[in-house]
Length: 339
Image (cartoon, rainbow, N blue to C red; front, side, top):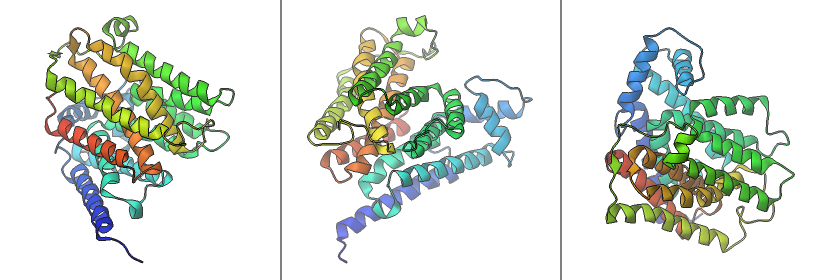
């Protein structure tokens, strides 16, 4: 069997990149991690206080610390928590048919970016996203809403409310009485409302706490506008490529498999969210507002990337998307204070 040198190099390069990221997560958790100190403070607060039952946004982090922290150290907790997250992530990749033998350098780019950003830095949101993605492994079953997935839904939504929109989108896609066109339209509308909630007026109206009162406003510059527009351009190229053939995102029926759900939510969520959210840049834009927009956009691009890496891994535009995501995350972690 002939295997070209380029394929071997790509596989080996991808493997080295993933191993490097695993090393950072488990053996140097403070590296490229702007949230490391903040979570250490939370860890100490939890350890120094008695247990109390609550449902606030840090409650489940409190529960996880008390349940899985056998070492009594922050580093030990990070290792235990990361081990659970990595195990879930590997199971999710297996069900997406992204396996070691099919690994390439370009496939490893978004995987490494997700590992670094969501499992290494944003550990609460990362775990909440993993619970939702893990639930999709049983999407083909008649009864998706099982006790297990209900628990995942409660834990994930309370751990980080940003994942609630993905759960609602999944329920929409799973509902039998809607046509595929209606389902996709509802996802666009749902994410449009999410984009609308980012506007300061509507955010204050529904008492969202995303606004960072101590953060400075972001000053627009040509370089920043060009950088932000690049996200839209990349999406447009990918979406145009997707529409040029029959795929899970434009078929008349939505197939009950995880990659189909991930792709549809990623594409139509982006279409609904971005045009509405960017209008918040008209006038002064608070850093807290920008961070929320960037977080949602990056999450949607991760979904599109995972979908494309599963369905069209050798497509030129998939290469571009995967590379762009990796570079964006790397820039964010190396220069966290540059917006």
